[in-house]
Every structure is written in structure tokens, then in C-alpha cells.
Amino acid sequence: MEYRIQKLRDKLKENNLDAAIVTGRPNTLWLSGFTGSTSYLLIGLNKSYLIVDFRYTIQAKQQVFKGIEVIQYEDSFFTTLNTLISQDNIKNIGFEGNIVSYKEYLDLKEKLTNAKSLENIGDTIEKLRIIKDRDEIGRIQEAVLLGDKVFDRIVNFIKPGMKETEIAAELEYIMRKLGAEGPSFQSIVAAGARSAMCHGTASDYVLKKGDALVLDFGVIYRNYCSDMTRTIFIGEPEKEPKEIYQTVKEAQQAVLDTIKPGISGYEADKIARDIIKKAGYGDNFGHGLGHGVGIEIHEAPRLSIKSKDILTDGMVFSVEPGIYVEGLGGVRIEDMVAFVDGKLKNFTTSTKELIVVN
Ligand SMILES: [Mn+2]
Image (cartoon, rainbow, N blue to C red; front, side):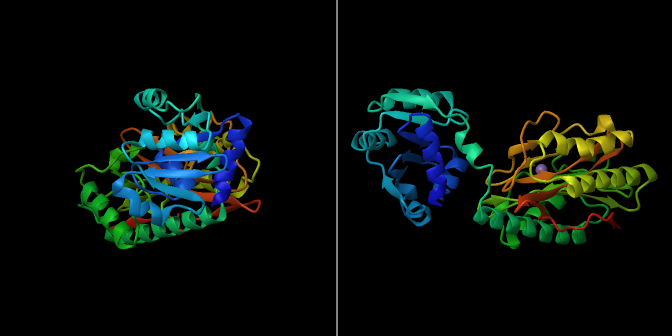
């Protein structure tokens, strides 16, 4: 994993920096392998250190990648940081401007007395994380596979008369039982008219015949997220929901059949959007087509009408068109895909045939 640190070092050199202080959790995990909740990761041009408090010393020693020295702080994080800064002759230090709070920034400014300057490196590390390596792609694929197994089981559990919350509880229980570390976000279980709310988390609504049910969930497995959505029906759906389902399915398939590395997030979104517009639901697809997934559930790149991102080899992202009609309900279908060796690989294997549970 040392190449990740090397990539950051190249960026530091480009910006005349001697080191970066990393405190953002996903960035820390990506660069060091450490999953704890508190640490200061100091990446210098030659040496790197993970500074932790007593609670995390054993864990950090087990987790960190080769080449990073674990140090338990003495009086405070800043005392130890200042010692290392002097010792390694670090003058200009970068910090994660997109993550560090104003208070934390003031702290850094005031307490890193041995540094000459503090510079904002913005989302430099997040941008490095856009391209996944083989290890990451392997982990993500396993997480997605686990999600598929969860879907399979939950479909067999769902019956009319159940509450959304009951389904969400079972969903998250199954995840854990199958080995997930937990859900990658609060599961979306939204039925009937509630399914028109794109992010309708489970309520005490009781499922009844004719309802659409949007299930949008993911797992965290070996530190990586999965994300999937399927819309199923409770009893045979009416004509319009059925047509909406076919349109969403067709729009998603068109994207999956067409996109190749080099396409922009805007163009990919437009493929699905044009089909949905043509079917008369242009105003009912109010979110972007997809987003990157990795250590975080939502990361770069973005696939949307506003996106300027170019989708390239090594990127992992969701493809999730939807149609939402107030009062009637919504349909969304979401797969997780990647560009690998110049081709699109779809990791999600759950069926997209219309599922009706009775
Ligand atoms: Mn998603």
C-alpha cells in the first residue's frame, strides 16, 4: 500500500510541502489501514507516523501498513507532532481543508508551533482515492456480493402487513449474520406513496397490496461499502407503476450497455435521462444517475447533469436511475459497476425482473 503514500508525497512535492497532517477518517484508513476514530497521521516526504492515544496503540500496531511508525502520544497529540516536525525538519505542512473544522484549524495554527506554515490541500487525498487499486476493487466486489445475498434473503422475508421498520431491522440483522461490519448507510425501506421519497428511511407504515417497495441499502465489508437498490411490488402492481418500472429498467440497461472509460459523468447521466424524458417522466428523475463508492458510500466521481468528472479505468460507481410520482410511488434500480481493463464490470447480480411478493 506504500504506493498510496507515494502518490500523496508526489502531490506534496508539487506544492512545495514537506508533510501533510491527515485526520479525516476515510483518508486515514486509505493511507494507513487504521480504522480507529481518533489519530493524527503525519505523512512526511521520507517518513510517516500514525500518532494515537492509549486506547488505540495495540490496534494501530496490528493495522497500519508497512513503513508507517505507530507512536502513542505523550502529553498531547500536538507535543508529539511538534517533536516529529522538528526532528524531521518539516517546515510547510498541508492539512485537509475540506475536512478539518474551523476549530480544528485554529488548534493546528496555534499549537503546531514548530511548523513554519500551514497550507490547505483541500480534497487532494479524496481525489487520489477516486482510482481504486486491485485490492480495493476485490473488497468492493465482495461487499456487493454480500449485498446481493442480503437482498435474496430479505425478499423471502417480506410479506404484506409488515411494517417498514420490521423489514429494515431484518435487513440489517441479515447483513450482520452474513458477516458484514454493518450497514453502509441507514437503509431505505419505503413503500406505497412513501416510495416517491428518494431517501425514505423506514417508518411504521404497513405494507399493503399494490404497493411499490424501494429497498436501498448497502453493507460495509472489510472496510468497503456496497450500495444497491431494488424496487419490488407487494401484490400485482397496476399498469402505471409497471410501466414506470420497465422505463427505469430500460434506462439503466441503456447506460450499462453503452458507457466506456472516457465518458463523462454528464454524458452517462444523459443516456438514462433521455429515455426517462421520452417516456414522459423527465421531471420525475430529480437526482443524479450515480456516485462513486469506496471507503465512503458517496464519493467521487459524480454522474449527474452538473458533473464534469470523466469516468476512467479503476473507478467504481453506482448506476441508479429512478422515477418518483408524488401520491403514487417511486421506482429506483441501482447496480454498482466499475471500469476494469477498459471494460464495464457490473458487480451487482440481483435480478431486475419484476418481483411480486404475496
Ligand atoms: Mn447509491
